[in-house]
Each structure stands twice: as C-alpha cells, then as structure tokens.
Amino acid sequence: MEDTIAAISTALGVGAISIIRVSGTNAIQKVNQIFKGANLENAETHTIHYGHIIEDNVPIDEVLVSIMRNPKTFTTEDIVEINCHGGIATTKKILELLLQNGVRLAEPGEFTKRAFLNGRIDLLEAESVMDVISAKTESSRKMAMNQLAGKVSTLIHNLRQKIVDILANIEVNIDYPEYEDIEEMTLSLMKPRIDEIEKEIRHILKESENGKLLKEGIQTSIIGRPNVGKSSLLNALLEEEKAIVTEIEGTTRDTVEGQIILDGIVLNMIDTAGIRETEDIVEKIGVEKSRKLIENSELVLYVINQNQELNEEDRNIIDQLVSKNHILVVNKIDLPSITNLSEYEEKHPIIYMSALENKGIEELKEKIKELFHMNQMENKDMTYLTNARSIAILKNVLVSIEEIKKGIEENQPIDMLEIDLKETWNLLGEIIGEKYQEELLDHLFSQFCVGK
Image 1: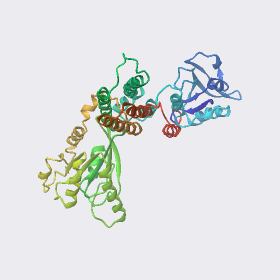
Image 2: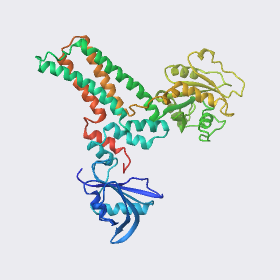
Image 3: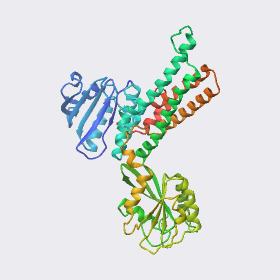
Image 4: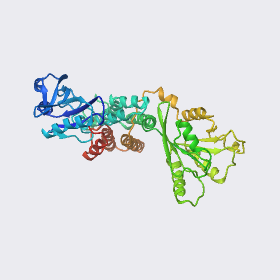
C-alpha cells in the first residue's frame, strides 16, 4: 500500500458536481502538480482550497480541493478530494491527468480495503459500507448504519472477551498452580459461562434472520394454475401494468419480477408461469421454473380462482406449503363461488380478493406483515449480522460451543476443552477480521463500487 491511488467517487454522468478521490503517501503532492492556486503541500488538514486543474498551464476546470492529512482520514492515509463540475469529459480528464502523474487507478473497494488493513474499521464495518450505499429502505439504512458505527462488532467483541476470561483462568491454573487466590476453573464453573455464551449466540442468529430480510428483502413467488389472476395480482401489488394480462391460458411463459416496499421491507415479487401439463416447450420450461421457485421462496402466494374447483395439482401444492410461509389467495370473488376451502382453514392463512377490482389488496398486505412480524421489527434496535459470511461463521461457532458443552457433560479434561475454546475464539475473530485470508479480502472488496 505504498502507492497512491485515485478513482471517481461519484456516479459517472451529467451532474452538478463530480468528486475524484486520491489516497496515499504522495496524494497531496500529486494533486498539487496539476493544481493552480494555493500550495497544497503547505495546507492545513481538513481545509478546502479554490483553484483550477491545469494541463500545460491551460485550465481544465474550476475546482474545490479538500485536503485531509493522516491519520484522521477514512484510509488513515493522506486523502485529497477534487470537487469538479459534473460531466463525463471533465471528470475523466482530471483522472487521466492524475494517472499521467504517477497515480494508480484504484481497484473496486480499495479505499475501504485500506481503511480495514490500516485498522480504521473492522471487517463487519467494512462490509456495512456497501450496505449503506445499497440500502433501499429506511429500516435497512438504520441497520447498516448500526453496523458501520460498530454496534454489531461490539456484540462479537463481548463474546470473545467472555471466552478470553475463561481461557485466562485456565492458563493461570495450569501455569501457576501455586496461586491459591485465583479461582480454579472447573467443569461445573465453566458450564454456566458456556451456557450464557451459547444463549447470546442463538439470540444473535435469531435476530440476524430479521437482518437478512431487512437487507435482502423477502423472496416472494406468486404461484397457481393458468388464468387464476397471478399477473393481475402482481400488477395490483406493484400498482402498475408490469405483467401482460389476457384471458388466454399460458400468457405468462417466464417469470416477471417487481418490487414493493412493505413497512420498510422489500418484497421481491415474482409472477410465474401457470402450473399445468403442457406440450408447449417454452411454457413447459416456465412451469418447471415455477415448481422450483416454491422451494426457494421465503413467501408463496398461492392463487386460486374462486370460480373453479380445486384439482389434484392444487391439493398437492397446498399440502407442500404447510412448512413454508404462505398465503392462499382466493381471487375473483366477483364471480360465483365454486371453491370449497373449509378443510384448509385451520392450517393455512386465506385471503379472499379481486385483483381486477382491487378488493382485498390491503388485507393481503396486512397478512404478510403479520406472517413476518414486521410491526415488531420496526421497534427493535436493528443490531444484526446481515451478510451470509458472518452468519455462516457464527453458526460454526455455535457448533463448536455445542461440542464444548458435550465435552463438559462427558467430563473431558479442562486442557482438552481449552483447545476447542481457542478455536471458537478464532472463529469469532474471523467475523470482525482479526483473522483473515487474502483471498477473502480480494473477493469481498471486489464487490464494492470503484471509488469507495
């Protein structure tokens, strides 16, 4: 990280302002070479300077240049931000001049990667940077900000500290048995401490299920036979004509997608091909996609035409839905009722509606909120793990803790359990980046936008 990097930090296009960010040991010197105004190398930290970016003494643009000296910067290195007029040609030209003067183009996420490697932020906080940028709702923004502020990291640090306290006690007992004033760590003393750690881990994992929903949204599939009103339901929920609606069976041959925000949570809606036996090759592929989506969805809206009797396919799918979050949506209530759902009323939430006449939409939304306890989520502190990497590691930590509990029950020697405790402590360290592999960092930060 001895070199100096630069990148455009604002979206490329026509706008009032563009920002080119430069970070590194020679950041101030390199910008000063193409700047006409005050001598930036003599500038105080956290000051802004008016002037021009020049090439061969010819002005390229009128700019404001912010100077931020190490270590009180995002990367802990010297940082310069050039605020120029927005526009593709001007912005690219200034970046080109920097590269011609020995500055290297930053890789995706490299500024944040430097902040992590220089100890400015931990790995959880680094991951939350992109969560803040990509947040689609107020709830997901609050959650990302909590992680960026270190609240989630504090949970992990506290768990590690509790394990360290146990380890330290064991080490003292082994290495200094003559210290009689130090409590001897026995299996009976260790058990309640391990139980407490396990309880906290389970709580974090449970809460993180909500975090995943807030961050990624709820994968919602609209399933049913042809011509029951799936596309009409999608259009009604989205409040736009997203899907084509006709009286012809098999109109929807592939999935149609859209999003709605419900109490701060995104519903990723997918309208699917009607499930039926068909000889049409294209439609057949769509039907197979629909069947697979039932397994992979977090919420299934199974649409039934009130004016049709249930067939064997309907009954088979409804039976499969018992173990999933789902709602039976009885559509076309404006038509005579033929469907009898009395046998399903106890085990299945049912909403009666008319997508065509926009009746029952609000009742459906309320039922979705109820299924996912959305009203309760809004009142929580939003301190969750939100990414698959950290959640997967914490699940491995839980497995390790369960092994330690098993060892206690089997009266294994303390020094044997100490090995498992150290491994648990190391796993927790992977979550916040106390321990990491270069390949992990390369993969993680490659998903960031350039200039961040």
